[in-house]
Image (cartoon, rainbow, N blue to C red; front, side, top):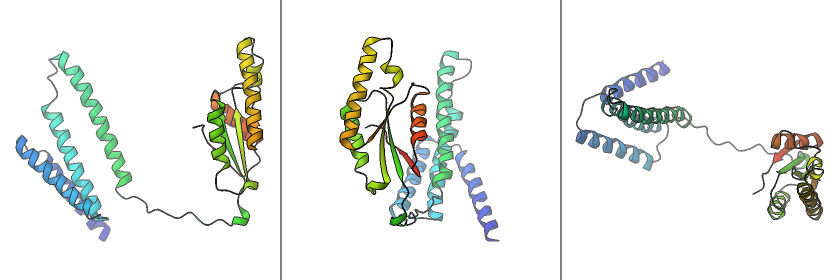
Amino acid sequence: MRAGLIVAFWAVAAILIVSLVVLPISLQAHLVAGLTVVACMIIIKFFRAQGIWRLIALALGTAIVLRYVFWRTTSTIPPITEVANFIPGFLLYVAEMYSVMMLFLSLFVVSNPMRSRKAPQIDPQNLPTVDVFVPSYNEGADLLATTLAAAKAMTYPEDKLTVWLLDDGGTDEKCSSPNVITAQQARERRAELQALCASLDVRYLTRARNLHAKAGNLNNGLAHSTSDLEAVMDPS
């Protein structure tokens, strides 16, 4: 019974809003109505109203958008006979309507948000082991040192945390490149990053070939992982 009343209420409200939206009114009346609706929304927001009041605020905002769509559709599109004006004007209209559609989709998400939930407590004596992957291709040693140090500094038992540098810039393929300069740079990079990982107590891993870009690099890391969980931290 209650659910039926709620559906009936919103159906009547929707019909009323659509009826008001399509009313032919002057620009001044349109401005006054818009400001009134915005003021009502601000008042509802100011009192942090929830439940039905939140839905009313969203409905008022939707009414403003629908009024704009009605005005935009009926009063602003150039005549089709004026091709030079109609084509760019219609393309802009289509882009705006796409944005409106995306707005309405987002309303379904924000209309009834889920309450925040606390994460369940985990037994500190039975924590999962974690591998943190830092994939890299051409980042410098200074940047990687910062990222690796940050990964090592995460609040987690050291015996259950392993940080890996996945180096795709020093692969066997690049180190043996027919281009002498490329091969030399790759070998120097590999040696530098191996020394960096040793100083930070981080595992260095590369692979034979640069296949499938970053996804292949991560898959290679997963193939060497034995931990319960894996995390990825991009160099930054």
